[in-house]
Structures are given as C-alpha cells and as structure tokens.
Image (cartoon, rainbow, N blue to C red; front, side):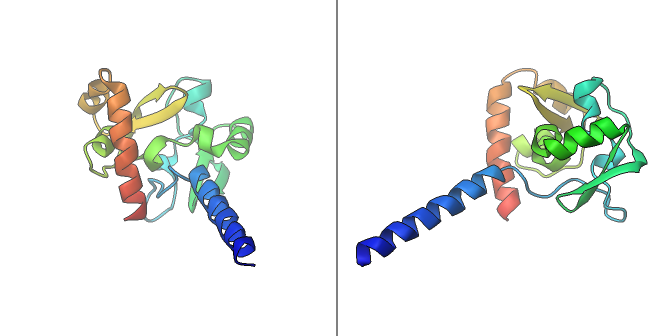
Length: 152
C-alpha cells in the first residue's frame, strides 16, 4: 500500500510541476492601472505581422491574464487567442533591460525587438541598444529575475 501511494504522490507532484512550466514566464502584465489595458493598447500581434508598433482598437479586444488586449484587426485577435504566449511580450511587457538588471520598470511600446520569435519591450533606446551585444546573457539574467518578481 505504501508504495502505491508514494507513486501517486510522485505523479501528482510531476503534474503540478509540468503545469507550472507552461506558465513559467507568465506573471503580471504591464497594464494601465485604471483601465486594465495591456501594453498601453498596442496590438501585440502587429509587431510580428507588420513589424510595427501600432495601437489596437477598443472595439477589437480580448481578456487574458487579467488584462484587456487591443488589436488592429479581428485576424490579429484570433491569432492572439490561439497562441497568446507566442505573441505576448516577455516579462509581461515590462522593460527587458530593466528586468535583466533586476528592476521591474515600465516600457515604451515603441521600443522593442523580436529575438528568437519572442517580443521584448524596452524603456529606453539605450537599454534596447545594450541588448544588441551579449543578448543571450541579458535574456538569461532577465528570465531569472522575472521568476523572482513573479513569485515575490
């Protein structure tokens, strides 16, 4: 009997762990305190499809991770609904450079980069430019710090 329950406990722990991994970099979304609009109303899909930072429409929206996301087109909203983790910015839209330095800083949605298929936003051009070199290390540092902020 004891072995049977030990196996069930291990399986349960493994399932909890695996479910947690899918949400590893979730955390708080950068949004307006009063409106709850994510990333100041910019369409997260547009960065990928049009290579531009453009505002979405208040008429085309979707609620995800306790934030309202705006989109330029219904197609962009559909893409986001199907793959939100693909299109949502890293670190909830907070400044990637600040996160790599251990600071949770707001971002300017017009300062961004797509690196390895992921959207990173920055507070300043200087911070974005810093990420042009040693990018792998900055991402590693930011990922570690994001986990601290996520569970702090």
